[in-house]
Amino acid sequence: MAGVFEKVSSDNESNQIDLLIGRRIRAIRRGAQLTLDVLAQRTGLSKALLSKIENGKVSSPISTHAKIARSLGVSLSELLREAEETRFLLIRKEERKPRSSRKTPYGYSFESLGARWPNKSWSPFLMTYEPLPEPHTSPGFNYEGEEFIYVLEGRLEFFCGESKYELDPGDCLFVDGSLPHGGRALGDKKCLALLVVLPRNP
Image (cartoon, rainbow, N blue to C red; front, top):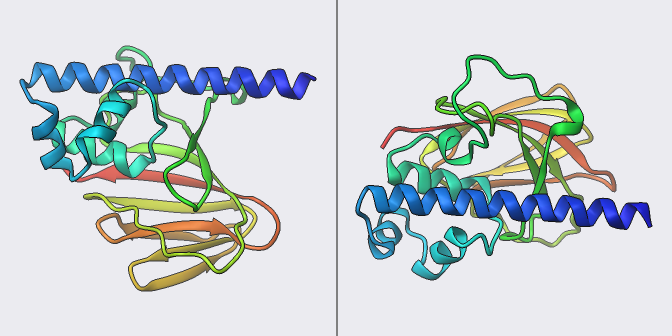
């Protein structure tokens, strides 16, 4: 039963974070006097999806948040922040908050390591990639930015444009985020990786 309660608690925290981010997106958008239609045009996302994001109804992948942040003229860290400005930050292991992406068949979860470190140009994430069976379709995540991926545990198959790479623990990869990209764990075990995202300025 303990595992069930832990999962419910984690889901509730994730929902609260989605709601917080959605409210911040709406506030920034309204502050810039932008309609949902205009933001949809800028991001290439549908008005319906943006409405769900603003209302905390959907958990979005990092690439979607990056597109929204760039279109609103703010940093990804500012969009995902959970606290006010600070000059240093220590996050204990038990304080990290996992979140899930449900947009893609490439199942993964991510923990924002810098959500409480606002107004910084780069954003670190701890990624957990799930092993998914083949055949599978190529992922379509893309946004204007750059990524650095460092594999900590397990093995990772990563797609970038027309290229495919297999990474072992200790391997790292630099990625142009404007290319369609994504990854999955190889074998029957999950893959843990550090992801650093640097969106390009609008």
